[in-house]
Every structure is written in structure tokens, then in C-alpha cells.
Length: 166
Image (cartoon, rainbow, N blue to C red; front, top):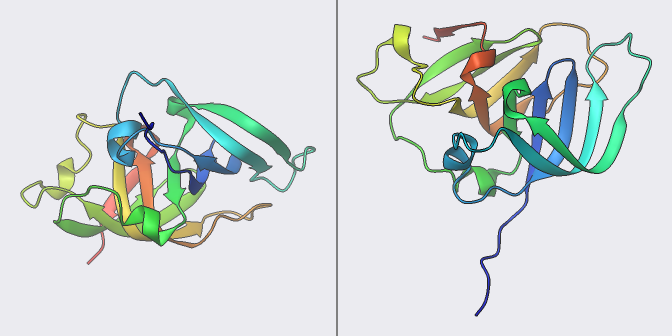
């Protein structure tokens, strides 16, 4: 009997004060995996953790493996278009801008077409997917994220504000 082969995905993660470049091996569909509340943290491999601020004394940390708490993750960018194409998404979408402490991110939020703009981030899920996203840093940074990404999963608890983009 042959086991299931899980693929590794190249990703970037925003956590408080750090940008993390790593690989993730989701167990099944990415959005189902990220929204599975039995995981309080996620395991990442080939990790490089870089400070966002220009005044940090440590220039970065490289580790073969690191666990990151679900609650600390602002977003996870999927860097590979072929992996992003594998994500199961609702067909309906609208262009949204999300704001975090460090970034403004514009992209297509995949959400039910009947959902009103004032209730896009309901509490059924922790992570919501944007596609065709552009990341705009709001401050001077020591490490800059990839600016254009095919998909980005957002932790709704880390979104400070949002608005539809017309």
C-alpha cells in the first residue's frame, strides 16, 4: 500500500514584527486545513524569520522547522501560482482592501455573492482567501514581502479595517 504524498508549498507569513519565509505541507485543501480549529499552531519547514522593523538587533533566524501559533498569523501568502490554483474557492468574488498594523493588501475576496459588505468576515472561519493580491507596506521595513501574490489567506482576527474597492 502506498501512502498519500503531501506537497510542500512555498509561502510567506506575516506575524507580529516578523516576516517568515518557509514551506508548508497542508494536510488536504489549504483553506480547510487552516480553518481546522484542532490545530492551535502550524508547522513550517525551511524557515527564515526576518524582522520587519529597521531597529531590530537580530537580523534574522534560520531554522529547519518552526511552529507558529495560529493566533499570531496575520496572513499566509501562497507564492506559487500552480499551488494557488489548487485551492478550493467560491466562484463569486469582490475586490477588497484589508489593513493590518504593517500592511494594506488589495485583492479579490472569495465570498458568497449575497454577503453584504459590512459582514464579509463572519465568525464561521478564521482564515479568508484573497486571490490576485498586492501587498503594500505601510512603514519602512527591513524585510519586504513579495508584493504580488496569486493567493493570500488572511486571519480575520488580525484585520484592523477593510473596505470594498470600486
